[in-house]
Image 1: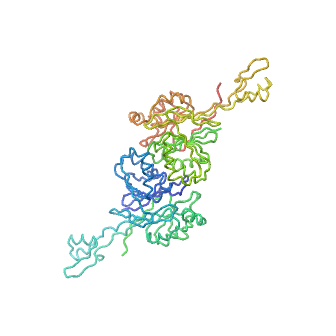
Image 2: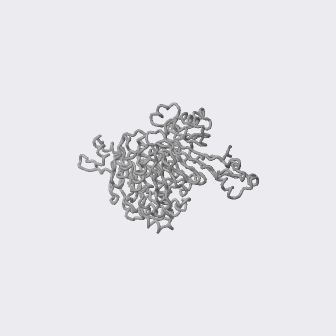
Image 3: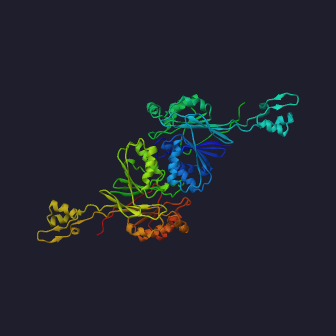
Length: 310
Length: 310
């Protein structure tokens, strides 16, 4: 029942010798999701033993090259790998034209389908759902249309409190109902509330990806209380003015958002190539939000299961 | 007066954990040329301390993604680096459309010009010349229009044999003429041939890049006697049939071309991702042409200056 985020690239627009451009792989219950796909994402996935066959959904935040130029190679490699099942790509509507132009030149031999889902980046909205998770958009504040993505694990099936089976002589049908959240109607007309009979085995987990974006208080309510927040921090605190001008955030701004949203852990990334040593950036963010960590290539952030607190 | 080739990527269509896709950087007298530009070429150039500002010419062999998907990122980074001087790209005519589509979405803010030169891949022809080198096309045999490139250092200016200045009391004008290759007309009507008066300080060097290609005897005459030949060897000898079917070569075929062309040194590369250990491929090629070396990421092949043999 894992929920983990692998950093494939941590750089901003220009890569560096050691930092690839933005891409994160999210593994929830062994289903893999890719967020953004900077150049080199496919080689980074290989290095992290992420099977291409297990990626069925790619979420693109915006159409700057450092977030999508890895798509061309990845989509081509999927075909070479004999993929037959479709891949779903989510992003701003113009991405469909970019993909179609790409396919015009390079897709002749593709034997799988690319299903494109246009996303309204200005709305906070549920855009994906399966049996285990939901994905919502997070409108961001950048120079071009841009949204983040919020991954939420669905509430798990309830566990029955074993002693209750005996106490109320529960039938199989009653147990099934209780596991779905029903209360128990007793023969004497009394009602035993569900939470006395069952409990949630663990707290559903959540991951919010917010890049690229300037400082935006509007996102705080959407990402409130998430377990893990990735928020870009392209610049150090001293470059606040530049950050504002070009729709990016500083370390301290990322940390302030994390604090206001009461998240459990913050990852900062999308570092400008001017920074060789990232520790000063980390120190700045930690001065505001101590539970901050650096996005580093091939680092895995696991969100551990926690018992549900009643 | 260097002449060296840096391997940026050695993989075929699919990259591997450690092998990027095709790209070679050629440094001749501190002028840099890029041949092909697979995904990740820009990060590989950084790792090899190759300044983007010094690259003015990119030669593309053919329009398969593994040879060009690094262009998008590289061209974008050039702009972020505040490039103002133009870059020249050589390749099959359709590349111009691909570049124009790319610029349509990503080139709005570009402040430098991309000058495209369509290349007739079916002709062996001089396509580039500056004061130090020439570049010729090498028609190759692939599934799509494809040509290699042959880099030749121009003959250096002649050195005068010092003892001749005294012997024939040469004037400055005569010395200048002899350095340009003229014979000496003496007052008594006799003629002293140039080679008695001057000598070439070193032998001009040459590098031929042949990928992707099936086995093609036609290239032998074009690449005859080059100092360094890169010839693709996508497959081991046992996959000869498959190599033929899809327009690639085996180790042994690459080595046979090197032998027939009497080249000094052979680099094999464009290895299929099926090969983890490349040494068996090297052994196969060396059984035919002992001076064979493996293309490996970040390896530099230097062609040393050699005294001209009269």
